[in-house]
Length: 404
Image (tube, rainbow, N blue to C red):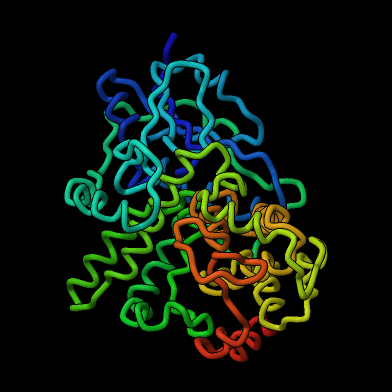
């Protein structure tokens, strides 16, 4: 006997501003059934486990207020839960698992749903106009959900503490995501365009991990930034470009490639030029363990890796430098990609994400253009320590990392 409409949250682990959950509520209301929200997380490491548990606590509390059931499991129990479901809704996401039973997948990761694009886009300039054409339709608040039949069943298995999980230095969850968003609006939005590429200024939103785990939606962030900028007569174009166009370009890339963390899915020109220069002499060579341990000759590079190890993130501008140097100091470009992916998958709070993989491969030419040819890099864009010294306050950043 069917008892509920089931929503399996794979990528968007939140109750609000969630198109997939809203669709599940609509289906349930039409059938006069309650909604059950299911979340599954298999323990990975202390940092990621604690971040997910923070989010689960916020999600569970909000769902109780909405009258929606909630089950959080360390093991996959989808088959058991779907057996009693009148309908199953899940996330349309490049890395989502497709259930083996009839289901509906809804995109709540992007503002403009990925389904509007029928092929892989070459770069930001080829997708920007298409996104902006559709933004008036999709850059709109999601109506508040109201369930007709409240959940009255047992709570199920709720999140506790995973074996070995300890409090992360970065708290997860929707409450913390919104606190960071508010801080960004009040303190950093007005200086974002000027200082976004100055890591020591800490002018970015620090929301990438929350977007990755779905603790907050890019739609909620974009609306808040747009409205705040309008109220205080600020220009938010550069931030919205990163949040919408660049991020959704990465989702487009992940959707239309077989392995978005692979050297093989770089543009043909980038693969060719890097392969042509694969045997060029490297001035330095480091092993994966050297990189992981931040044991290179370069104090800036070591600081970026230490920031990753200690906080689970690297400032976006310096992550470009971080990746370029791994390419320069690795035996092959394939080895460099594998090292970058391994470090992000294991230490980054925003690892295993379309945006992160696209940023990694950007270091090898993805969504970029050919540049003047040089050793090792070929026609791929080069970045240098001296260039970072000219453009940013390297010493201030290194001091900040050492104080963490």
